[in-house]
Length: 573
Image 1 (tube, rainbow, N blue to C red):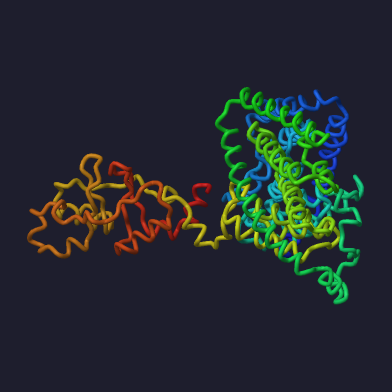
Image 2: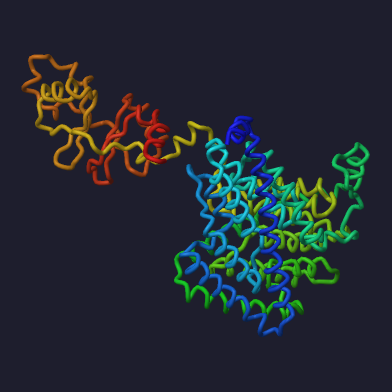
């Protein structure tokens, strides 16, 4: 025990050790999840007759819903969104007992043909394991370490399922924010992702995640296994970049930004419909639509390309001699399949579906421009669309760099940057915040109810000024008191108003004649920032809180806002 306490005193050592342990545990967990989903279920579904392939998604959605409803005790189908939500909570919570239900629901959804990615359950599993590790060893960790291990676990999940450790780190750091990164978790995330990657490839092998990018015909020819780049290496990369590539990257970034913005809206709509629609109609309608999409895609493309995450669709679209009309139809059909799977309550991620849409859009753009650079525009589209949809441009470009051996990184940076500008604040992630807030900024975003005091004495309008002074100002040391008639708030009376009245008139002057009715009344929906601005504008340090009908609820004091951390500690947050 004494050794552990000594270890805990050495800065980040316990956090780094737990990050490594988390990486190992997550790699083993995700290897099993991928094997069951891909090797046992999805590969076999692809080999079945067409009518069975068409019926498989509805069975998967039904099983996923039942798993979440009963063993999962009505758990939500959210996965990567749960990581972002927990990250922004004051006391993050991802119960370990919910993890098996989410993983099995993901296996049912994706393994039986749902058009979502395996990274969603992987991120959720990593974040849950990281949080469980922190909770288990909390006595040797600091309070802020909870978000660090949460992020490290998510990084390990992405690194394993994509065999891309740098992408895992950057995605986990970028995902909680639209325009910022979580820098404090960098080192633990690096260790967790690297550990997870090494363990994972030793369990399942180093095969490429995106098969078409493993084809030498789709590379610039630059590959390296070195841990650093020389000047000659960088010159080789830039020498393969042409002016036409950069102009094409600008156009593709514009189109991907618009596409990512549209898909973000559709994803939010689908998630909303999934919460509002009852279980049976949601599954039946969603399954019927997915079955129809399977039949249509088989007729159009000779293969059911709407099944699964979409790697087969990537391979199909980059093959030569496909018309623009068919490529455009595939873009729409794949997007519809993903949105319908989400709307029907499916469990899975959006990273790979977004990447698939980007590859299809990139191939379409490349053919429109008459490009003869094999693999260029699909790769640029992958980076741009993925970055726009998730608001994670650095992770998107790094993913391209890792899975393509460094090809097309420079134009991919341009395409991703433009797509970010066009996409604006839209994102497929529900709980992302704009930027990382400081200590005071986080406090000001909290609701006024966090400092609301309801157990207060008020003054009736017919009370005299003397009663206010003796019963409140002197006896209770209250400088300002709310004047309330029944339940109706009338205004505030304070010592400032009393000082303007002659002492001889205190006994005959009711507070209704000196109260201030011009002060703003705070609504329960206000944030602390709204309250501080109102106090500053009125020049007071206490305001009344009322409902929409001006019914008195309580008061909020400036001192309580300043002491908010102490109050939250005393009340359990």
